[in-house]
Length: 148
Image (cartoon, rainbow, N blue to C red; front, side, top):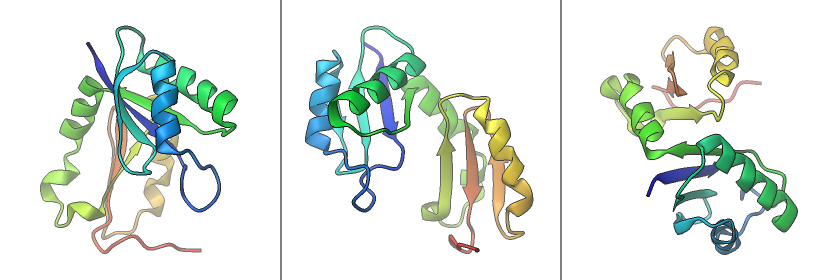
């Protein structure tokens, strides 16, 4: 049975968009997914499904969270094959001095990566940036700094 990873964007940070993981696991079970597991309060879940595409699962999960938990949240779902491809295409990982500073931006629709490519001129000279086929990658060599 195929295994999938669900990523909820922007949940459980501060007091807004709270999604309790016990309720999230139960909701995924009600949608017919099996072997559901979550990690702490991350908004991430692994599950199995007998059929359906990652895009369909993402839409179904987002709709269920909105209607049941009353939280509007973007959901990204990747198959284990897609996740493996994303890890493999990340050539920045090979030269990264500190993997804790290596960021990955997941998208549900591959076309969204063209929009992410527009930030390349904003990347500091010490950082390394890559837009792949399934995700975008940023190696923040000197750490993550916020500029206003």
